[in-house]
Image (cartoon, rainbow, N blue to C red; front, side):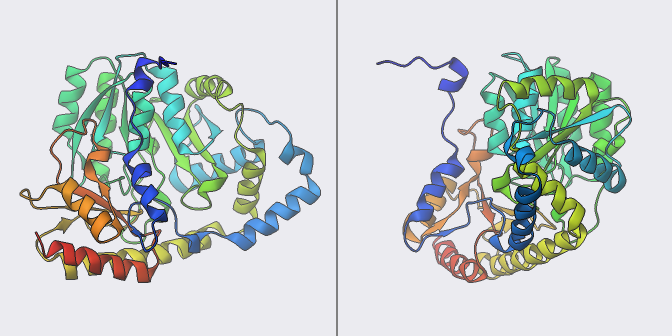
Length: 395
């Protein structure tokens, strides 16, 4: 039978990251391609204790249908946390619990974007969000990233030329894939432009809590006095990705519409996961837990960067990082990036993510690739970088 998929879905290709991850099962493969938290970072004993306690004392709530907005105690916990730590929950705001932050991208696009409407994104940016936007037929416009975030002149040009832009999508902290963190000055400038052009900002912040060097920068949401910012947060990188607990904060009217959209998708986020998350926040020293995670990633990131300095020399440059999970590497212009990544995975058994996976137009010229340091063991980091060093000698 000839299946006729919708135009927007028919044009979607499998994620390059997921395709490369298939190589992870090959014996001896070292994957720098994943974006998973380190297994060392999982608080397994705390989750086991909390889960057992919930199922003994409150099993029906954990196993029954719940409300779409999310488990009430967790919502209250997160409102208070975001207000006190990040000044990112205002009197006109509301919060909804989602199935990971990825669902926020889907719900925002469903709520605001008609086919052909524009979404302005950083270039490069996270492939999962790009595909969510593409699935609704959005027109995607990329804005290049400087060392301190989105280029403001290019952003204004994009806003001026695309008056049907519905929102600006940004990952301001340890951006995926570039690792860049947006300066406070640029956060203020982007907010000012959003206000000038009447456009929402979708602030995606899955990595902000895992800063292991430098100082925190206030969220764009903390600048929001006009209901222009929707903040997407997640417990995937600080607790467990498998539990699928994320959240969105925004103007009450926006969250009300996201709630209706979510009801057509999954009814509600898993109740047990939400209850575990809430109890974790209440019974575990969350800041100490974050410090433990940061220590793990500080050690691994510094190890990978030291190895890059040793094996890459001046042939491959990279963005030094102060948090997050990724390092963005740039090859010389005369080197074919796809050929390099293919040789790495086939000849050296080291999986990398080609930079084209993060572009709006995958046919665009690209000399970058992404590496991940959170998933490999320290020994794998050493062996994998040694193997890449052998490949670098050939270029």
